[in-house]
Amino acid sequence: KAGVTQTPRYLIKTRGQQVTLSCSPISGHRSVSWYQQTPGQGLQFLFEYFSETQRNKGNFPGRFSGRQFSNSRSEMNVSTLELGDSALYLCASSSMATNEKLFFGSGTQLSVL
Amino acid sequence: GESVGLHLPTLSVQEGDNSIINCAYSNSASDYFIWYKQESGKGPQFIIDIRSNMDKRQGQRVTVLLNKTVKHLSLQIAATQPGDSAVYFCAENTAGTDKLIFGTGTRLQVFP
Image (cartoon, rainbow over all chains, first blue to last red; front, side, top):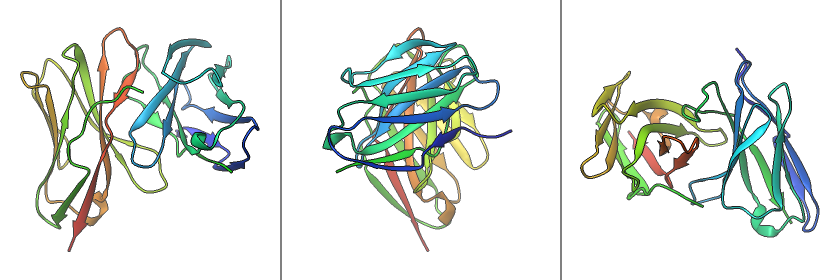
């Protein structure tokens, strides 16, 4: 069974631009969560989708948004990029109705110049 | 963002020794806990989990201990190997919140 797939693997953007990251969950998983990881920090929860509905949202500004499609694939978008948005963005999927055991992808490394 | 606290940022152990990684959590309502291992350039990988109705759970070379009285979680790795070198995260889930809250991580370094 294929794991969680995230594209692209690396991304370089400049301030003010917007970016879209993609995530394909494990087949059969309906819950997709997004996390931001920066050096020296833990994983910061962004949001979680289940059956195309955003079920939870973390403490991030409105520039961060996401969506989930009917095939459970998910995208997250960051608009008006800031230098501080440079991070590893991780997507995780879960088969459970509650967001417990998460399976992570390798992430998208975003660098904002 | 929210986070569960970890006390030791780096733990160095000799190959073959046992490792103990500790984690404190603040929400007494948390009922599910999980440990992840993250190697450089990779996403976190599931190691072991435990529910609040248990105080100990064992896997292959790993044991998780849960002390709900003091809200403390630990991961024990037996006979630590070079391949165990990574950053380890604990995470908690509170029933009804539908999200995992992660700690800041502990780096485990294994030397010969």
